Image (cartoon, rainbow, N blue to C red):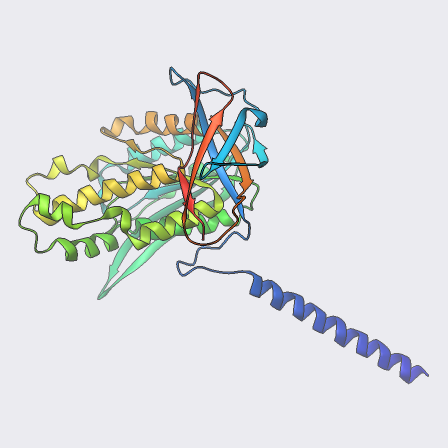
Amino acid sequence: MMQFRRLNRTIRRVLLTCAGLFVLCAGAAAQTVDDDETIRVKSDLVLLNVGVADQRGRPVLDLAQSDFVVYEDGVRQTILNFAPTETPFSLVLLLDMSGSTLNFRTSLKQAAARFIDALGPEDRVAVVTFHAAKKKDRTEDKIETLAPFTTDRRKIVQAINLAEGAGETNLYKALSYSLRELAKEGDRRRKAVVVLTDGIDTELDRQDRTLTSNAATNEEAIAALKPEASPVLNSLLNAADRQGVTIYPMALPSGDPKKFEPLTPPQAAKYVAARARLEVLANRTGGQLHDVYRLEDMGRIYAQVAAEMRTLYSIAYQSAGNKHDGNWRAITIAVNRPDAVARTRPGYYAK
């Protein structure tokens, strides 16, 4: 009898072990990763950050869920989740440490620290830097998290002060990395990326030069490019859509072509394409593109971005269509205030 009981206990242990392995394997199968390695958020919820202003451009901060009506492709949607403007953010502060920022690192770091001071006390911030170094016949990406998500302002400022680097610009790889880090913050957090850069991504620039190499004039080179059609850009935008991440690019003066005239046709196209892609990043995600015309303006613009973030409502709905057909879904938002206008991302691709 004792041997039989021991046999039963052994069988139960084996069954429990198998069950545990089954759960682990099922969990691994449930997690899907896109080609761009961005973690897919397993949810059909559409997440929106929404800014509302009156006719004078002043933010409207006292609205409730009942004041908003969301339409997708003209069909009214049911709002499932709503967060007021004071709800905290998870934010990636993304700093360009490529060679183009070497001459004003002190101003850059001071402005970034001022930005942190303007955030809410419960906002969680991660500091990420990016640049790329040439190693013989290859380029090595340097994307580093100097401070993981935290509300500790001392740690964040220390990380900003430690930021260093040189070399090329791997902007879109750094943005993809930032989205993967934000995915770890969970579905219920509001999310944003604030990126200070000139927008000229080295890898995309090489691709663009191939398309413009035979252009005889600046106009021909610019016409040869379709910046918004870049697969790299659109893969990033689709990943941001799934998490409802708002991106705020701050365009450095090193991306201003007027400082480098006269330009060859490929050079002219490079600056136009970089600027166009930054605009798409902002507009598609519901953020805003801010131009830094003078380095002394960086601190003020950072503070302006922080103020804009503090005026955003968050809304989540489940698409009534609920079809993953890859088609564009247009989003519009109405507000039950006669003098108020809502702004959010214009839509998403249902993938």
